[in-house]
Each structure stands twice: as structure tokens, then as C-alpha cells.
Figure (cartoon, helix red, strand yellow):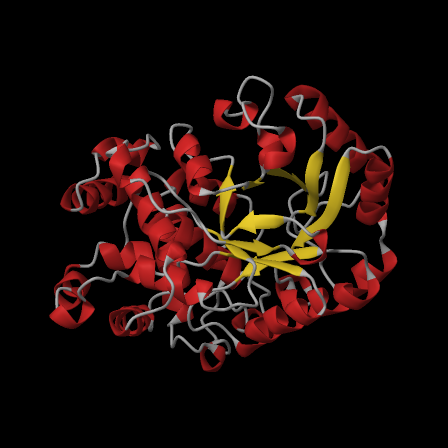
Length: 403
């Protein structure tokens, strides 16, 4: 099951052609469908103790620029990774609005390395935000978000540099709220995302969190979402579309989906409805490459309830994912004697096979110090995998794809 970038692009063209979307969308160009088909307004939810009322579908600075006016019209008012915009690239659809009508999030990364090897540096984080504000001209960022998060509870206890940088910026009126995008770090001897977020909820001034969440996820994620709601902490789900992209390219899956019992639903829309049905979850950030994809996601988010065919479509997707698609729970990493970041590797595979972003996937994979070739095939990880994936074989497959 080895594929290169050319294979992925060709399959993507076939899929997109079958759904009436122009092949130009593969290159990141949006599809401008009939404006009369514009989606309904998104529902909003309160983003925890920040008090912000945000549209349920979170926008992102890497969305196609022609999609953004339609997103704004549909009610997208919270923009992830807005630090990527400068004064020239800030979307006109936002520029024409009063500044208080939309919310910009600035993500702040570690320095001198990637998210596993880099360091927290109060002064450089502080200066980074000031520099981005100067170049963007937006005046302030509504949310200062620690990207990737702490390696462990112990680091969160001992290192307050990110919080101090936020507090200095807040005192100057340059940021308003503190959030975190938390990953798992058991591959380097750290803790799981939910363990760290539970600690932060009681001990640090984080007002909102972002984390991996998809259908079939571990109970600890749902438990965190419920706890966060009780503690008035905002929650945004990310990496939500596990297996949706690759299922769309699978001929057997498409034939099964043609059964009348699935009529009116798709795995993507069913996934959005399932996420939306959790009233404790504030919002979700979902990749949108073109207008048709955005419309499907937005209409699903605006839907009142899941229907029987939506439940059936998710069940079909779960069966397709079994043995194939990692849910990023990272349980296998805890028992790997080689300390391979298995979940990260399979996350990069998702970028390539579900999001069709092969370049990003290969770049991320190349940054690893221990890649798929490090696996010795001991099999210690296999009993931990709820997806029943042959992890050793899959690591070799992903290396052929991305190495």
C-alpha cells in the first residue's frame, strides 16, 4: 500500500472530479460554487471562561483566501494561527469589519528546535508576539495559544515562561486570553495530553484547550471535555477527520456507501454532526480546501441532530478504519522499547492520505530523529492498539510514502 505524491494527487483528482469539484483545488485553489448555495449561519458556543462567543467551525489562516469571505458570511469568527497574516495578507473580509467582530489567535511555538526538542523562552515568546502585531497591524490578539503544549505535568509545574510572556503582553493590552494546544509526549517520557490539561485546569491560568479528537477515541478524551465544561474551560477538537480522506478514495468503501441506508449522509458530514452533538465541546478546527468541502462541513455543523444514516455512515467508516487508520491515542508509544513517536508518524501519514498535503507530511517526517526504520518488529505495541493495526508493517509503509 505504498503511494507517492503523484499517486495521491491523481487519486485526489479522480475523487474531486466525481464530486464536481475542480481539480485546481488540489493545488490549494478554492472552488467558487454558486453563491446561492451559501451555507446557513454557524451556531455559536461560549469559549469557556474567555467569554468569547465563537462560531462552531474554527477558521484557519491557511484556508484558501477566496474561501474566507464566504466563511465570514457563514459565521466563522475565530481564526486559528492568525499570526501568519501580516498587514498585506490579512483578509479584506476581516479588514472591513470592526476589530471586535472577530477573534484572532496567535500560536506561540518553542524556540531552538521543534515541539519535542525546543525550549520555552519567555523573552523570545514575548518579542515574537509584539513583532507579529507590529507587522499585522491588528492591534491585539484575542488569544495567545501555547502551540503543541507542555511535555509533562512536571514541566508545567517548573517552567512558567509561557505564562509569564502572556501576562506581560496582557498587561500591555496586546493579548487577552491564554490557551493551549496540547499534544501527547509519552514518546519522550512525558505525559498524555489529557493528564497535562487536567493539571493545568486546577493550577495554571489557561482558559481554553485544543486537542486530538475523533470518532472512536479513548474515553479519557471525552472525560476531559466533560471536566473542561464543568470548570468553564473552552475546548476545540483538532485532527477530527480520521480516515475520511482515504475512505473517499477507496472503491470498495464507495460502493458500500452507495447503499440506500446511507443516503443523505457522508462520513465527513456525519463526523461533523457527531462532534457537534457533544454540547460540552466548544468547537472544531477542520481542514477546508475548497468551497464545496466548507459547505458540507458548515451545513452539517448547522444541523440540529444526527440522523440514522449519519450513525450508519460513521459505523461504516469505523469498520473501514479498523486495521488501517490510527486514531492518534498514542497508547502504543508507552510500550515501545525504541521510543518511536508512532502516533506522530501516523499523524503525518494522515496529512498525506486524508488531507492530501504530502509536502507538509514529508517535511514533518524528515524532522524526526527516530523514524519508521527504527522499528525492530518486537510486537510489544500490538496488544495496545484498539484499531488492530499491524504497527510494524505500517511504519514501513509510511516510511516508503514519506521517507
